Length: 410
Image 1: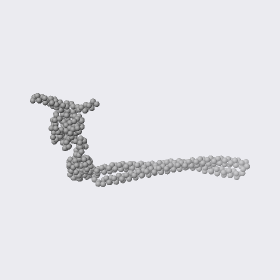
Image 2: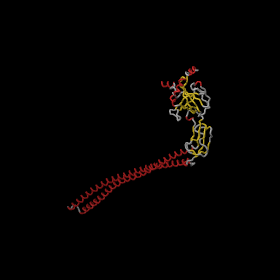
Image 3: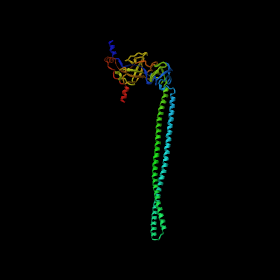
Image 4: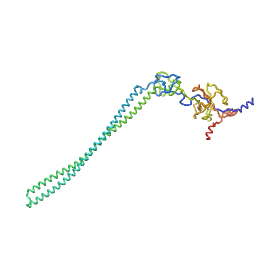
């Protein structure tokens, strides 16, 4: 017996890392989920029972409105009418802006015509001044001639060569020319006044139409401001209209995917619920099974992604020899697909295991949440070494898969 015991100590023993966990799904969207209410409301009618199979989009329950801002049954229709009224107001303001643009164009055309007319009058005034100036010079010349003839007539009369009647005629003609030159000077001054009046008229026209253009521009800017403000109100009302339409769709709570109704978290008729309240729990019908297991922190460095492990399930017949995996029965092959690098609340690290496609298939009767146990196989060592390591509390030998070593070398 001593010899057999001594030989037994040198038999091979496969070091392993053990873990416990439960059955889960490989993808997050395949795990049990709760359906929540997006809005607050009151439960009015249930359309499903616990255990029912439902398809994506099937109605689970109907809730009614409880917030006073949305109690109006014609809220969407009334908001739509407000949007139409505001859009009509925007069109009216746009028409007013176009009318003011036309008015500005008419004012500018009228200003150009009036200004050109005033410029023509100014030019006529300048020409009239020139004409009156020439006439004045002509009258002055005629006056000098009349004075000369009058003086000559006096001298000739004194010498007895001209009668007194000629002298009187020349005097009358001289007086006429003196009167005429006064009249001509008045005309010349009147022409100069017309130039001043024409210049003032140009300035008046410019000021008048500048005031009209400024008023029309002010009205236009006011109309544009009202139009932009109304457009902002229209956009706000459209946003509210869309929100109200979407909110009406939230009264019917539907299934997000195919699955089974596990449990009704809320129950009864007339019960009020808040936003984000969980209503029912659903288990998806289509899922890829996996196992989540937890290992001790001292063993975490020995776990590598892609490494194969052995898994057995609670309630499934199995005989497990941890050190001799070949002699075990009822275990199934798995592959590590993910591991968390942050410790869980239970003080261990979480590892996700998927079925090994090269091994036998996992049982179809497994249900989500069933308990599992797993072992990750490491190096082969003598039994005496494993006993010595266990008694001293040493971790298993540092293990690096060959595939990783080859990858590192490449």
